[in-house]
Image (cartoon, rainbow over all chains, first blue to last red; front, top):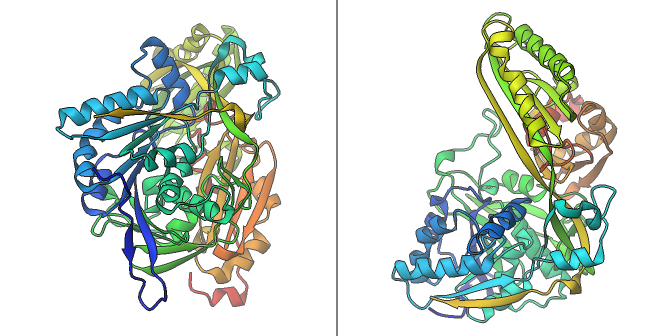
Amino acid sequence: MPSISRARVFATTGNVSDVRTIRIGSGAGYSGDRVEPAVELAEKGAIDYLVFECLGERTVALAQQARMKNPDSGYDPLLEERMRAVLPLCAARGIKIVTNMGAANPEAAARKTAEIAKSLGVASLKIAAVVGDDVLDACKAGDFPIMEFEGSIKQLGNRLLSANAYLGAEPMAEALSTGADVVITGRASDPALFLAPMIHAFGWKMDDWNLLGQGTVAGHLLECAGQITGGYFADPGYKDVADLARLGFPIGEVGEDGSLVVTKVAGSGGAVTAQTCKEQLLYEVHDPTKYFQPDVVADFSAVTIEEIGPDRVRVSGGRGTKRTDTLKVSVGYVDSYIGEGQISYAGPGARARGQLALDIVRERLKLTGVAASELRFELVGVNSLHGAEVSAHAADPYEVRVRVAGRTETLREAIRIGNEVETLYTNGPAAGGGAWKSARDVVAVASVLLPRELAKPHIRFVEA
Amino acid sequence: MKLRAIAHSRTGDKGNTSNISVIAYDSRHYPLLRAQITSERVKAHFAGIVEGDVVRYELPGIAALNFVMTGALGGGVTRSLALDAHGKSLSSALLDLDIELTPDDKSIKP
């Protein structure tokens, strides 16, 4: 395996200078994402890097619980399937893989990846695990205030499960520069997974804020995979997208000067347009002049977006300012329990029977003294998504689904909520069908800001 | 006329905060969005959902507005009782807002 990136040189027609360019494919936008689009990228995308972003907000906390039960677990459950699908292709073509599928256990994920490589006959693969995002001890020692609500780490007591800092691109870039073919992290900022190959390939300085800002724009646009190629977008008659069942995942062509063209594999489903890029640029963004990242505070406010060909969109104008002295830490904790029940009514009078069912359950929860701190009573098909006020003018549907959900302090109380919906079968309005119930514990996440020097990322290598 | 005819939109989530973009299909409609889709109007539209503030950011370079709504996701995505804990469906509700076109705007084909 070559240890140096295969950064290609593209002749830019009519221009004075050539700009070195790398092609980064985005192989997953969340942990459960489709697998074949990444295979298509590796096969036909002429990519240099394949990035898998698979770590949701609370996934690390859940993975940490798994690791406590089994020290060899705690990484992404789809790691094996994804690696089996792409490792031979990537090895043959010299495509480097960067992913946060390490979740709560990047080293175990690296060992597993090495095992998979061996079993597939992929030889001499260098796999790097980036560790050090776990800052639970530092957080406990410092007792930092929670950002989302009144309280501190100490006040979470034994409900505290995990604390993981959003690491930046530096350790990943260093791993690539040391010759890693596969880089596996735990918690890292999502755009940083894409920024790392840019820093590695182009030698960008870690205080070149404008380049890091524009690189963050690229990473931000690519990190949700199909969301920029026509996924989470189609609205028939207004925004039509062809062939979503075969949605192609995006490729970012990034130049050493930060220039960016977003595209996808020719012939794949979906579309890359100015519209898809604009929607994704603002996705999960608050103040566009201050998109806080571990490596930079990126500024999206002067970004311009221009279609330069079919499924080719140029994105320019990302900037940045100096990074902050703190890292955001995602804190996982046991919040509460949620009990839920559902049942359906259909045909003439369905809505009235559904409403009667809700009234009955409301009264039953009071009569039987179910201790819930928060309750929702709603009709799916009428008002469950946007509430009674926004949905006030909704027409009567042919069928409705009753939904009651409540928050409790114990699992026992949570179970009682679903039970009260289920008993509508024999005690409620006419013709209720398809009752369903559930009760679960809620692992929630909150955030704290940690002085950056308290997180100490480092790299462990595994050879396959 | 509905906002949906001249603009598209996407919702994002972080904790208990939802953001909704409103993007003009044609940049010539941007001044209209700016004038009529105010943060006050968005807050009123989402009464019953948004408990906190609605702050509007302007992005003239891409003819878009970005609304940031705090206290909008039932206590936070990871703990919400809501069916749509992420609030992903909220953009569709925003596109249902009415918008008035001036004679000049009407000459722009959506």
